[in-house]
Image 1 (cartoon, rainbow, N blue to C red):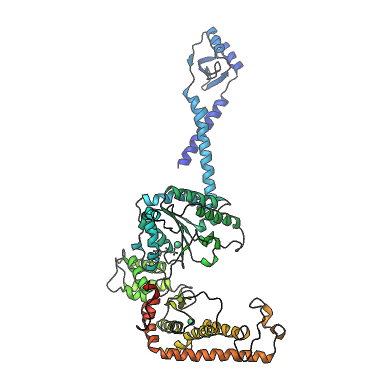
Image 2 (cartoon, rainbow, N blue to C red; image 1 turned 60 degrees about the vertical axis):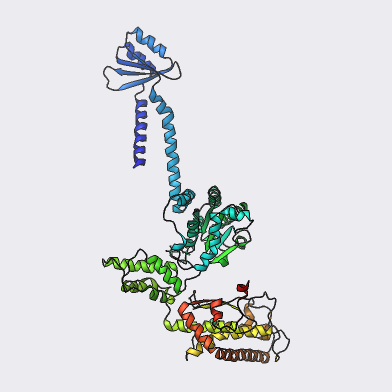
Length: 603
Ligand code: ADP
Ligand code: MG
Ligand code: ZN
């Protein structure tokens, strides 16, 4: 609308000008008109450039006014006096100023405005967003718009504890500087999408009451070369002015992908942006009050440069929530949604293994939509059941809904691994056991290798095989049938056994001979015929026999150990079914008090 008005005005002014030009009169015709007494009315306007001026005349048989530019107004005065014509003499008029100064300026401004608008539109929303993100975000803290705090982040207890220190630093940086404490510059939040990384970063800023500057890595992707880098520079400039504050780079993998990987265009741009980011991070001091947080779900593809000390040297893993976490998240999102008496959040939490916070939020939202459609002002359990179908049984999420039977098998499977890690001397200890589904795996048992070992011993390798087989052995305890869940374990056990025989000379039957052709996995033709194998059928048969013998022995060992720890196996599986995830302490408590107390706790 405004644009239209401006345009209309412009056209009006322009045509006016044009008309004035059309009505111009030559000096000679003017003089003739005066001599022939055709002139009815005359006025003279003095120009700034004395003595030039403009004469406006009205002819006797003509309606329109005509103008004549004259080089000397005194000449005109003399002429008019001679013919006794009355005339008005005006000084430099106001509207000359409008025409000569204001209008050109206005036109220029409008022109620039139009060009900027066109550019913005052309480069899509991303650029436009980036162009003013700094100012927008800077307002975030001063404006009292909905502040996110740790209370809004349900579950994620360990993660919040880890970030507590950052919050404290941002609240009172002096306290840390005084004692010479070094606070990390960068914190990398790592975890699957929807687990609350962005939320957590905002909550840190909210808790500390500092400004929150944010940009998403994907914002840089469509930009012109150089724009990303300059955005980064501006971002940090704004941040420095507003310290203490948080700079949050969401989806950092979009810019900080390992250099030299990935295909196609935008490469230079990404590299420039990444370089600028590294320069900025190195550029400010340790305790300047800027904490850079970044989120990714693919830490493995990040450029190692970004993980170097002094950059993102703190790593917070944001995992999928366990049962308790899911219940807490449901509670947070049910706050502004009235629930019917029949809704049991605990029970929903139990049936949503593998759901992220975002999934759960979506679940309740869909339920609310169902309720609203039926003009109810509260959510019923049936709404949730229906939305479950809608959000849960999407094509790729289908596998996420785990049946009770599957959970039970997984619980025993993981308990089997964990117990063997614990009781065998050279492997483990167990850092955590979980039956929360992650991608393809139903659960996981994470060992915590205590020593950095240069080489594996024979005993250790045998124990690794035993642990791998423990999952399957434990499953057999509760199931007569055999599942496919242990295929990965079996492959691993076989690989270890095979290398013991062919590479490390750990089998008496074959002795200290290397039967491994050293090409490893790289050589494609490896399994095609004897020439690449380097040994005959007979030896091949012996290798297979030896591998089988090792696996069988380990299997028997696993079986007998799990029989011995039968009660722990059941207890562990029960606890896993209930809590879904056990920490090291919770797990070790299952073995009773004969265990020594934690070293970590003694300190
Ligand atoms: P990410 O950045 O890890 O992909 P987000 O932080 O964007 O995930 O989370 C998306 C949404 O999911 C949040 O806005 C919030 O509504 C919900 N959510 C995720 N995790 C939690 C949590 N722990 N507590 C409460 N809500 C959560
Ligand atoms: Mg996010
Ligand atoms: Zn397993």
